[in-house]
Length: 304
Length: 302
Image (cartoon, rainbow over all chains, first blue to last red; front, top):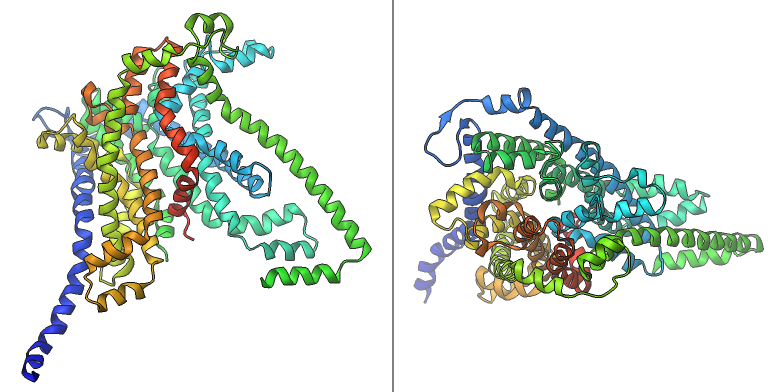
C-alpha cells in the first residue's frame, strides 16, 4: 500500500503542473490559430503587397518600395481628397451623433412616459444593414420624387430642392446625414448605461447645497461620463475611417470622385482598377490610423 | 436602503411650510420641463420614423400613382404585387437562404471558438494571459480592408472562392475579438469555487467548460448570438469581394445588385428593401432588450 503511494507521489505534482501549464493553450488554440491564419497572416501579406506593383491576378509582381505610399500622400489627388473626407466624416461623427446621442440619453434617463418606445425608435436604424439604409436615403434624396424635395416644395422652399447626392457640394453632407440617422443610437445607449451608474446621492447632495441643473450636469454628470466618452469617441474615429457601405451604396464615390473615402478608394483600386499593390497601401494607411486611434480604447477594455 | 432612510429623515426635518412650497414649485417646474422634453422628443421620433413611413408608402403603390400624387400622398390603391415581383425577380429567396445558411454555420462556430478562448483568459493563471487577451482586443481596431486581397487569394487556393464557405473564416475572425471580450467578462462573474469544487470531484477543465460555464452563460450566449447574427446579415464588404456568383450572394450584396437592376422602379426597389429589413425589424421589436444590452455589455463593464 505504502509503496504504491510512494511511487505515485513524485509523479503526481509533476503531472498536475504540466496539465495546468498546457490546458490554457489547448483552449486558446482554435481561436489563436484561426486568428493567425485569417487575420494576422493576411495583414502581413497585405503589408508585403503594399510595397509591390501588382494587378492582383497575374504572376507579374514587382517590388517598388514605398512608391505606393508616396503616391497616396504626394501624387494622387483623389487619395488626399478621400483622406480629407474621412477626416471631415470623423469630425462630424465626433460632434453630431455623439452630441445628439448624449442629449437623448440625458432626456430619456428621466422617468418619461413611453421612454422605452422612444429609445427603441432612436436606436432602431442602427440594426439595419447599411446597404438598406443607403438605399432608403438615396430614395429620400431622389431629385424628382424624393421626400426631402417634396417637403421643401410643399413648404415653399422649392428653390432649395436639388439632386442632393449628385451635386458636388451636398453629396458628402447628405450621405453623412444618413450616417447620423443610423448613428445616434449607439452613443445614446452607451451614455444611458453610464448615466444609470451615477449614484443618485451625489445629485441629492449637490441639490441640498443649492446647485442648479446646469451645474449638476457639468460637475456631476459629465465627469461620470468620462469612461463612456473614451469608448464613444474611439469607436467614432475607428468606424469613421472604416466607412465604406454608405458611400458605396449611395454615391459610389461620386459625383466625380468627390465623395471617395479611403475605404472605397482602396476597394476601387484593389478590385476594379487592378492595382492590388496600391489598394493594399491605402488599406494599410486606414489600418495604421485606426490602430493608433484605438490605443486608449484597447487600454480601457483590457483594464480590470 | 440606507439612502432612502437618510432622504426620509432629511425630508421630515426640513418639512417647513417654505420648504414645502419650494418643493411644490420645483415639481411644477419639473412637470413643465418634462412636457417640453416630451414634445421635442416626439417631434424627433417622427423625423426618425419618417424614412420607414416613406418606404412603406412607396412600396404599396403603383409607379403611376407615385409619379402623379407624390411620395407622401396616401396610396390610391394598395398594390402588393411590388413585393411579389421584387421577391421573384430580385432573387430574394436565394439571398435569404444564403444569409440564413451563413448565420446557421458561422455564428455558433464563432461563439464556441471565442468561448473556448475566453475560458482560460477568465479563469486560469498562465504567463501570457494578459498579452494574449490584448492581442485579441487589437482585432477590434483592424479594418477588414487590410485583409481583403490576401483573403481572396487564399480562398482561390483553397478552391472555395465565390462560395459561402469562403465567407465563414473571415466572418468568424472579425467576430472573435468582441466575443472573446464579452465571454471573458461573463466567465469572470462565475464563482471560481464552483469550478474548484467540480475539480475536486474529478471533473476535467473540458467538463467544467461544458457542464458549468457554458450553461451558466446562456444569457450572454443568447445576446452574442443575436448580435452576431445581425452583423452577419448586414455585412457587405467581405461578401462583395469574395462572392462572385449570383447563387451565393448574401442579402446586402443582393440588394446592391437589385438596386442596379431596378434603379428607377422606385416602388419595387423599396419593396425589396422592405423585404430585406423585415426580419431584422421583427427580431428587433421582440429582442430589443438583448440586442441593446449586449452592445453595452461589450463596451462598458458592469
